[in-house]
Image (tube, rainbow, N blue to C red; front, side):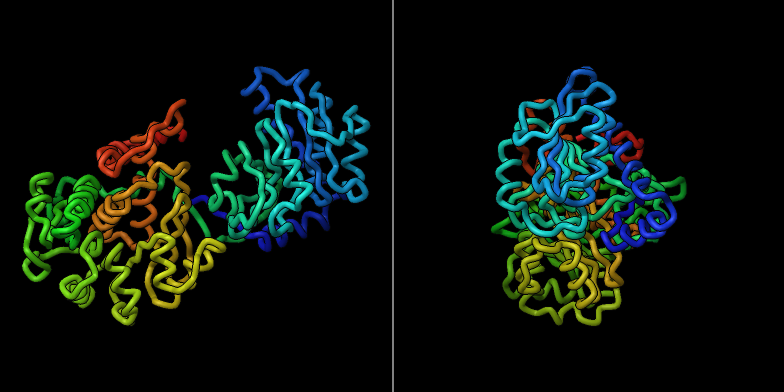
Length: 479
């Protein structure tokens, strides 16, 4: 697992080192790692280091000091370094002296550098960039390397309440913070520099691709179609038959042992997926080991009846789309349910369920709903947040937004449902399904190539098995 530590945890881990080490040691460790990453980035982008130009955007906090010390180290390697001080009277004195001693200069303008270092605000900062800093950042055309985090982005929630830096690379010191997984579009590539912190266990983590691949259920010598997991799908209907096709397709592609479909879109489902076993309703579906309910079923009496029947079972249940709308009106339907229950809302569905917009603190809001209702909650987004009732959180950062297309959630529901039917706990099934889903979207769109293309849910679905193969082989392409 990759763990993400809060500002408070990082500060607590830094305290004994700051007390034991000579003054400035920890900052210079961080700066050395920062300078190393910047030098590598210069070589990658320009072919060299000597004679290249770097501009430092320097605030009054420790991140500004980190940037100044790194600038002094880069200057000694032959880089032309200028510093723009946003608050000259409060600039880090030792760092500024080191930069000047190495031949760095202080300027009022950014210039035309090869790279810019964002040392405006550190992990103690909150809120958007102030107007002067926002104007300065808006005029930057060079790639930005963020010092620990992009300024203007909340370190613990990843929220961006106003003007903020968008970095090509973020260099994290000592620990990954929640911002690095919750605001991936702002952070760019994240490089971690070890500065010797001893950190506690964190309640926010991400499964690595290797872990996802290792845990993906595959048939053994003694398995049959029943032992590999049988998932029941209640989706689609006369108005939205495509939801049933996509949801069942996700379950089939995720290597479910058997998919049983219950609903009015059986002809359409069978024409696309003849291996699915279809029935008119839940009562006739036969034995399953987990249920997926909701995509395209509507919110009328028949949909509610099917939802209630499934929730009365002692099986794991995933609720998506229209099932969440029904649940928003009757949250008591899941109250006291002993079997695992997984809700998979997007932000607007989440707001209907709770009355709250989750965007300001996606982890906090998702945790609160999971704890209040005693369910597992997957909040969709580029950074998918999955919370258990006990407060543990898994996050999947997709690396892009290719999956933001109609029907994509139907595919995801089917994939996760197939995993649930194998006996995986809901949070693991959700995180694994989200990872395969985001990788499939990246493969379908060509993310990482020079010209990525928009995709449809159908195109994403065709790449699910390819994504699983890649995860199983631990060969995850950069996106």
